[in-house]
Structure formats: C-alpha cells, structure tokens
Image 1: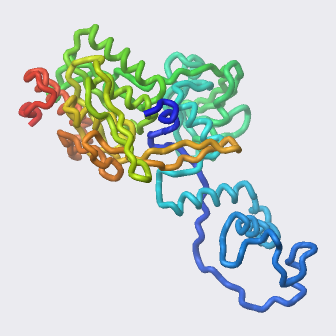
Image 2 (image 1 turned 180 degrees about the vertical axis):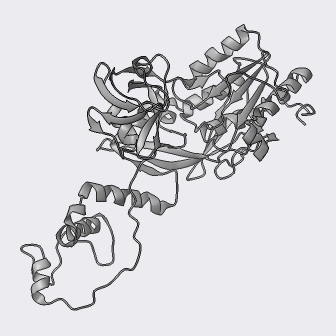
Image 3 (image 1 turned 90 degrees about the vertical axis):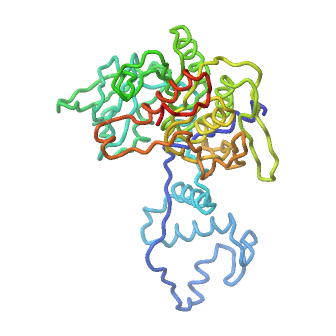
Length: 435
C-alpha cells in the first residue's frame, strides 16, 4: 500500500463538520394562472424573444449545473425576501444536498475554515493558545487548557466561559466560530474576556504559540489504575490513544519503551471514544505488535483488493488487552481487529461504532475539500466493519448501579483478562478469571 496514496485516506470519523442543509417543509403551492405575453417577455434575458430558448440553457427534461444557475437567477429576481439570497450560502447548501442525496454519512463537503481546522488536528500540531472548548448554552466554554501552553500560563481554567474575543461579544458563537477566531499565527496576541466559575470576570491577553497535541496519555480514568477490589495496579501499563495522528506511532513507541523500562508485565491499550485517524499511522501501530499476518484488507468499487501485511519483527512481546466502546471508530476499529484476529490481543468492552469506509480527501479550489467514500475496509479475516463493528471477546454491559457508582467495569474486566494472560502465558486465555 503506497504511503503517498494512503496518506490521503483520512479514516477517522469526520468530527465537527458544520454544514447548512436546506430542508423544504409544508405545502408546495403551484400558481396555475396563465402569464401574459408582457410578463413572459420581461422574464426573458435581454436580446432573447419570448418563447425562444437560450443557447446555453439546459435541454428540456434535464437538470444540471446550468439549471442550478437558472434557479439562482430566478430566486435573485423574484424571491420575496431578497436579503436571504446569499449565493455563497445557497451554493454551499446545494453542495451539501448533493451529498445528502447519496445517503452516505461518510461522504461530505468540508468548507474551507472547517477543513483548515481538521487538517491541523490530524497533523498533531496547530498554532493557537492551547485549550479545548465546548458549547454550553449560548456560549463556548473552556473544557481544559493544555498543560504548559499559553492558555494554561495565562490562567485560563476549566469551566471558564468565553464572553468576548478581541472585544467582540462571543454570545451565540458555535465552537467552530470560536476556534477560528482564537487560533492564529504564532507570536500574535488574542484578547479573551472570560467569566470564571466563581462568577468573576477577567480579560486575558494571550500570545499564540505552536501547540503540540499529544494523542497518547498514560493517566487512567480517575488518575490511578485500580482493579475491581479497589487495589492499585502497578504491574500493568495503561496507554490511552485518543486519536491517530502523524505523531501517534512515535508516542506509542515511547509509551512501550517506558513500560518496558518500568518492568510492566502487560499493556492495557484504551481506544474508547477514539474516532480513528490516518491510515498509514494505523497500520504502523498494528505492525508494532505483529510479526506476520494481515493487518487489513481494502476493497474498492470494482471489487479489487489491496492487502496490508505485517512486517517481520515486533516492538514488544508483552501481552495486550484492548479496551473499546461504541464510540471507537474507523482506525481504532482496524487496530483492534488486527490484534484480535491475529491472536495477539483480547478485546474488552462493547461493540464498536462500525465505520469501515475509506474516505479519500480531494482538496477544492476554494480551500475546502470533499471527503468521498472510495472503498471498504475488511478485517484480517475479511469481516465487514461498516455497520457491524468489532465484536469484543469479552462483552461488557453497564448497569445503572455501575454508572451511578462510577465503576469502570470494562477496566476491571480488562485487568482480569490481562492477569489471566500473564498467568497462562497465552494471548487468548480461557477467561476463567474474567468471569
């Protein structure tokens, strides 16, 4: 599988793609009164007699780009609310309508601003202040300032409400609008007026910088890895992969080397809520743990197959358990399936999302892009991923009591399975310890 072609395949679930859909509702009223000749003549383009056809008009019965332009002209001339006739807005809505008609949730148009953000996110770096944000009511709030970034050093706190950006009210802004205004070239400043959780307000001037976004972390939920008995687990390494970017393979290598140096006996790899990411990096991750075998199969529109195989040699022989959930998608599903079906790891959790579609990115002249579904992914055993997901070896069902008590049942089971692997020396144990 050629790296340059594969690099163009973003296999993550496309997140935060904000588009506008035109939805027609109510009654369609047709005016059936016969127009008089004067009206017909007035409606014809200059130099064209009533009843004649323009040379560039569409043929009768066809609908094409010329028809769309013709409709736009009619709306511009006749629509009762002329202020609503924004051609850029309507053309974008028409493009979104094209993809909506395909019935494929993975093929979509990305406007230039959103594409710039998503492209930076997959690179593992961006220029800005270094904080994650989320929508809350009519305002955007700070979810978490990244440690050591300008946002953190300026005193932004989790829960801060962004009231103004450079003196402009941020009320009613979407997350996309806020991100576009707050991000900017390294060395430039942005002024944020925020309301802290205690109700006090503050204006902060923050100088943007190059932000490194790590896709891998070592901190388990709750901060300390514990088993079902509440005992701290110190002999196992926990690795969380949030998304798969260009930097992820090296981050995982570093994590494995750290685990080996600390004498860990097994790896718990958590891909819960991981939406996927880049193809080359996904195959590289799986290859770290495999000495041979198939990593994935790609089947195109003509039924042609391209197979990605593991190369000789592994980065580690430590036993592995993969944790997934219903939000693990695309690249994280491929990773889990590659280790599962090659007998390298057990998968614990719930059935994954089921996104097995290859999306090719085609950049457009306006700076935007289209993601087009061009093929399907299959697991090493040629199981369908799209709409099916990866079935865990150890399925987990949370009860209301578990949720209310904050018990991470999947983690408890993963620890049990790992200890069974260590005890038996097998990658696929009998699961007696897992119940």
